[in-house]
Length: 187
Image (tube, rainbow, N blue to C red; front, side, top):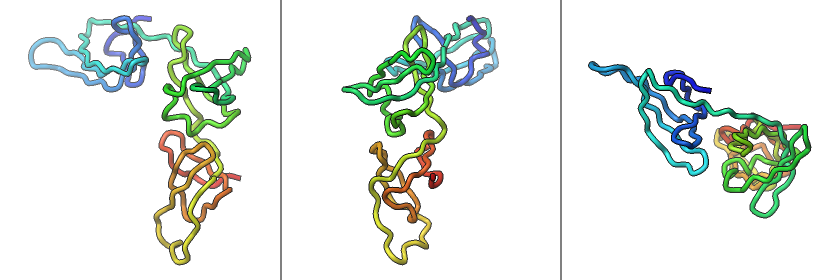
């Protein structure tokens, strides 16, 4: 679907120069002479290269068609992670390199949304928060409980976070998947 260059939004996906790009930044520029244009910073989805591009008001770009699918994380296998489509029960393996930032939040049976473009997975959206068990943390030293700082903890997926001093090994805690921060204890 063709859209005006001025309708591009930050975070949207567009097809440009035969590749798929994510819009990182957008800036409207109205020079003293000549027509207005927008300056956009794009990041290529497969190789990660960046491109700064100018579009005039008359330019159109191809908005990428993205198909979101609800999937369930099953297990890690070799250099990849296996997901199952909730409707068709088909299994899909996503490489570990594509999930570097998100692996620490994935437990078996976690529901995620995988976005597809032309039948290829291009990104995973995690739930807003996940519940993970603390496998290792320091004990509380008497008199240290009044300080507002936390202590480091390792979770069952290997993720490291800072938790309040009252959290102990074996506790289940809720973690924000966008910031990686402790939210609360979970029951």
